[in-house]
View 1 (tube, rainbow, N blue to C red):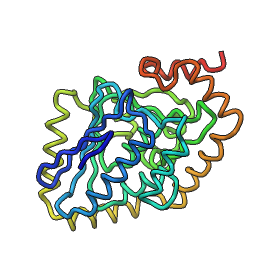
View 2 (view 1 turned 180 degrees about the horizontal axis):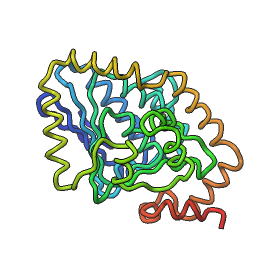
View 3 (view 1 turned 180 degrees about the vertical axis):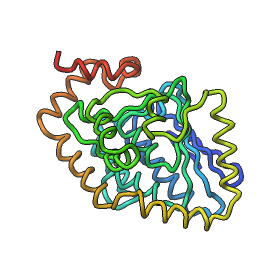
View 4 (view 1 turned 135 degrees about the vertical axis):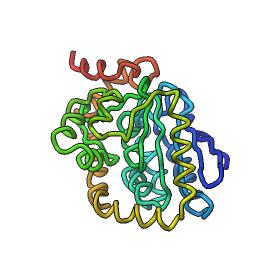
Length: 272
């Protein structure tokens, strides 16, 4: 498999996937295209049971969507689900027979957070991982599934806090709130995740599928709910206020590597 933004390494029944989309792992059409191709390939290969997603960039896992290329990345998502929606792409991953694990170092904001939420399990480096669902800072609803995932994981009050504050959350608080399975020292993360993935991959694939199916029946929102959030994002991102705030953020360095190291502060000062 040859990708522009991913490197895939198959070890037995585990496919280790490294994300590398410089300069800061934005979720643009190239990364969405590669994720679609990777998922299709892995689902078609009976020898692959587990996907592990990592980042080649220590500061950014997936930063968020590329706000300058919304139509393009949504069109790439349609090649998997038939609909121009990353929400439905992410839900597809949650519903897949494949077991998916996110090994998180660096920032996961917006759709980056929604991608790891769509994975079956999330483990994060205590020293470096940062989480945010910052779309409401632009007057937008998270459109990739965060409303559905976070509310079920955290409960109503914490989900509203996370989304309406548009703030950054460290791994300790993310773990306490249920955003991730565990926070652990970075030096332990590789070994822990690889060991867990290999252990899961040794067990019968049929068991994985039936367990996921029954857990999803309880916890995974209906396709219609994901579609509704995606449609609302698509409608609202074109509104004048959202466009004004996105433009103001871009003028202040939004989607540049250095500014986004302290993104929460910049978003809080957009009207200054």
